[in-house]
Length: 273
Image (cartoon, rainbow, N blue to C red; front, side, top):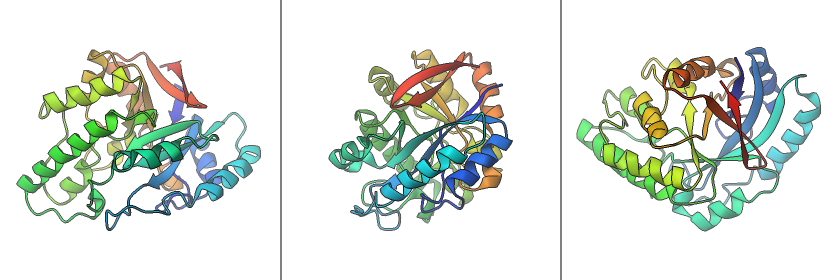
């Protein structure tokens, strides 16, 4: 089984806890053979929702740490540099500028907050009706993001689920519940040659116990002709390295996928599973 991880964080992310070398070694110990760092660059401040002019202030640190990690990485581990670029639909021009960083192999397009609002992680949820309204707005912004060109793969479709369930509300982001919006979102990505991510962090979360996005979204993506799919642990600590990757591959095989995708210098390459 070939384990790849195209969503992992280091201390170059504000919520990261270990160096790239520490995360690389921990991943390699879990059997990962291809790893791409995707540290955060969110265009908006996660507490206020206001534009953050210093959103890419970690650029030099990230590039320097990656360059220093390459000669020290475990033998047999292929290492690449990416970025998780959040809220790109809030300022597409700035997102394009950041994504054009020539050293990047891969760009995840993500959405952690709605325009003018704090990160979903920080939101105080009060009712299921409120959650459903927010999910609808979240999908609308994902559709907006899906029309842009700066990223390669859309990250964790259904990011909202963990935090709403933690608050005691069930607001799943599924193809069954939102068929029209999900079909439009996935069709936009496929038409533009973009992929989706199978984020495996949900397998280890007792509140979810499932992939992000949900299996029916992964199934619909394939039915619509989607082929580009990356797999990621979304690890922020060494003990999370490699989490759920084998479960993710097993699910993809069950759904009829024959390949996963890796990127180098923004170009996709397909690996048989």
